[in-house]
Image (cartoon, rainbow, N blue to C red; front, side, top):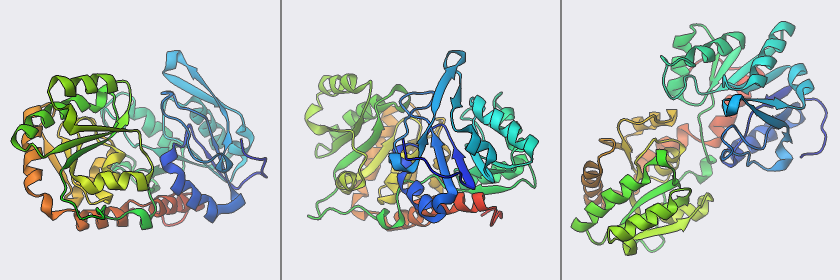
Length: 366
């Protein structure tokens, strides 16, 4: 827990701030100074989603899970959250504390913003989508994770104040094409992320097993970890491709990841795509994405030209798409998609959107 600070003019009272938010939060706190205070809990409803930013950047509050894990309430430091000039809360109907703080601050006439996904993964027609709209109507404005979501937010509530804090990982200086110092030819298919059922990593292993029969020099690198790791290792052995598949473990450091992207001619999202898309395109490596999955809003990066879709749940079509990318591997890294990502999805852009929202400036969309 950080040392005690004086009440700030601006408060972020959120469920969690994962490690990948570190650069954005550092930039924001450098700019806002003691005017900003941040309150988060150690973990979300899904306890695998944890706060990972440095402890000196926030004050920890407790969290209690309710209704058999379907909702939660955060306790502690409500005073600063109620009294701040502007408070930012999660745009998440499962947060009882967000509802209560919204109501209290609305009754007091104080400015509150909500930050998050405009619609749930199930889409604008789902039952919980209306709850998000109610939260947004009570609030004085919305902070969107993506450019497309910001457009949806204005369409949902015409005339509403919307800011864009594009979901980003790294500072501009760190978003650059991945290059191999030895100028080796790219020969790897790359996956970076959790080994969880929704990510469908086994589909990629099966597709690679098909593709490597045609191109035996090909390699598969699975960076990550999770509940399915043992099953994936067994699958590579059963398919007879264990020697062509690497399991480097969980790596989230940018410099440590760069060599893997420098060896890759494509990355793959066999399940739903999320922030990994921002990472891959920033390195100048195109991503193969399943066409019918509940993707996170970051899928809007397909506008960069760096995304190739394949038919969901089809290892045969994914295999064919991998082989097509193999034939074009001499054209990498793709400088255009790296530059596109750097300009629109940097930690500086995300922090700037949050700063504008807190200070109530530049409310124009795009």
